[in-house]
Image 1 (cartoon, rainbow, N blue to C red):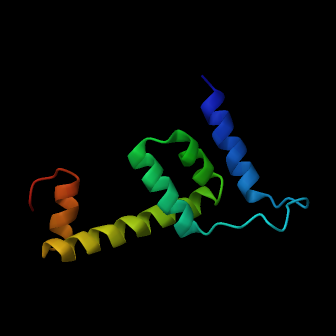
Image 2: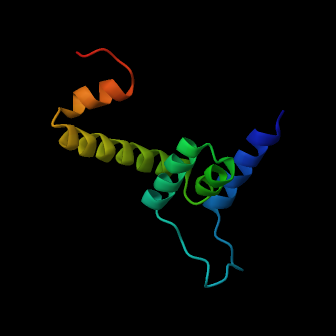
Length: 98
């Protein structure tokens, strides 16, 4: 029952620390890369990739990256559909037209 919150907390702690023993080959991930992996993993229901992306950046950074990705996706889809971003966002969420 407490396994998932414990793992999440452990990942958050690990993401805030820098390990002195980290190898030079270990590549740092930026928040936009983490957001892209996180959102695509959520869409594919891939819990392992979700967990991996959560550990790359702080929760606040991940939240910002996901928000930025959502904004960019809505704008791109609105341009493709020749509609307003508001109309597209409401349609994606299943809300009635305003």
